[in-house]
Amino acid sequence: MLTLALLLVLLLFLVGLIIVGGLAYAVYRWPVVTMPLTVALAGAAVLAAVVTEVASVGVR
Image (tube, rainbow, N blue to C red):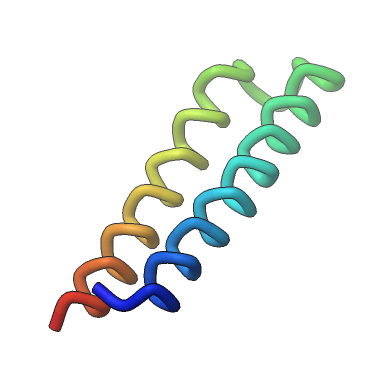
């Protein structure tokens, strides 16, 4: 895998962690929305799917 592709995957992972943290904080502030852990895990699942897709394209 190219260095550029690895850096892109790392960048997507870090941005995704920020997004997941933001989701967890937002739900923590307003618990009416849903349980914080459920939203954070859903965001993490989407992040994992995106990173996996980018990594698999980088290998080809």
